[in-house]
Length: 65
Image 1 (cartoon, helix red, strand yellow):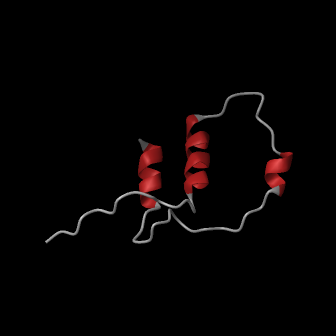
Image 2 (cartoon, rainbow, N blue to C red):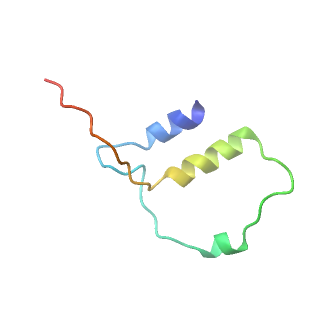
Image 3 (spheres, rainbow, N blue to C red):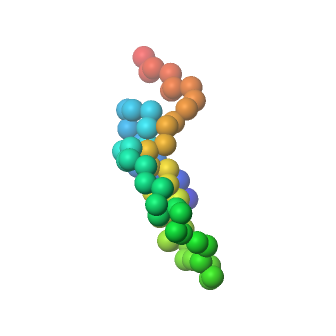
Protein backbone atom coordinates (compact mmCIF):
# COMPACT_ATOMS: atom_id res chain seq x y z
CA UNK A 1 0.00 0.00 0.00
CA UNK A 2 2.93 2.33 0.64
CA UNK A 3 4.01 1.95 -2.99
CA UNK A 4 0.53 2.87 -4.22
CA UNK A 5 0.43 5.87 -1.87
CA UNK A 6 3.89 7.00 -3.06
CA UNK A 7 2.86 6.74 -6.74
CA UNK A 8 -0.32 8.70 -5.97
CA UNK A 9 1.90 11.47 -4.57
CA UNK A 10 3.52 11.77 -8.03
CA UNK A 11 0.17 12.64 -9.63
CA UNK A 12 -0.69 16.19 -10.65
CA UNK A 13 -2.94 17.95 -13.15
CA UNK A 14 -0.63 16.78 -15.93
CA UNK A 15 -0.95 13.27 -17.39
CA UNK A 16 2.58 12.44 -16.20
CA UNK A 17 3.73 10.96 -12.90
CA UNK A 18 6.33 13.23 -11.29
CA UNK A 19 8.89 14.85 -13.58
CA UNK A 20 10.40 13.56 -16.80
CA UNK A 21 14.16 13.07 -16.82
CA UNK A 22 16.58 12.53 -19.67
CA UNK A 23 17.34 8.93 -20.53
CA UNK A 24 20.70 7.48 -19.53
CA UNK A 25 21.28 3.90 -20.63
CA UNK A 26 24.83 3.58 -19.24
CA UNK A 27 23.75 2.44 -15.73
CA UNK A 28 21.49 -0.23 -17.24
CA UNK A 29 24.34 -1.62 -19.31
CA UNK A 30 26.49 -2.22 -16.22
CA UNK A 31 23.80 -3.22 -13.72
CA UNK A 32 23.12 -6.75 -12.53
CA UNK A 33 20.67 -8.58 -10.32
CA UNK A 34 21.78 -8.80 -6.70
CA UNK A 35 22.88 -12.16 -5.27
CA UNK A 36 20.57 -11.69 -2.28
CA UNK A 37 17.03 -10.42 -2.01
CA UNK A 38 16.32 -6.80 -1.09
CA UNK A 39 14.31 -5.27 1.72
CA UNK A 40 10.71 -4.44 0.86
CA UNK A 41 11.27 -0.72 1.52
CA UNK A 42 14.18 -0.59 -0.96
CA UNK A 43 12.17 -2.39 -3.66
CA UNK A 44 9.19 -0.10 -3.07
CA UNK A 45 11.37 2.99 -3.44
CA UNK A 46 12.90 1.69 -6.68
CA UNK A 47 9.47 0.91 -8.13
CA UNK A 48 8.16 4.38 -7.31
CA UNK A 49 11.28 5.99 -8.85
CA UNK A 50 10.73 3.87 -11.97
CA UNK A 51 7.17 5.22 -12.28
CA UNK A 52 8.33 8.84 -12.18
CA UNK A 53 8.03 10.36 -15.64
CA UNK A 54 5.61 7.73 -16.92
CA UNK A 55 2.61 8.89 -18.92
CA UNK A 56 -0.79 8.22 -17.40
CA UNK A 57 -3.34 6.92 -19.85
CA UNK A 58 -7.00 6.34 -19.33
CA UNK A 59 -10.25 8.16 -19.15
CA UNK A 60 -10.08 11.41 -17.20
CA UNK A 61 -12.30 11.79 -14.17
CA UNK A 62 -15.66 13.39 -14.96
CA UNK A 63 -16.11 17.06 -14.07
CA UNK A 64 -18.01 17.64 -10.86
CA UNK A 65 -20.94 20.01 -11.06
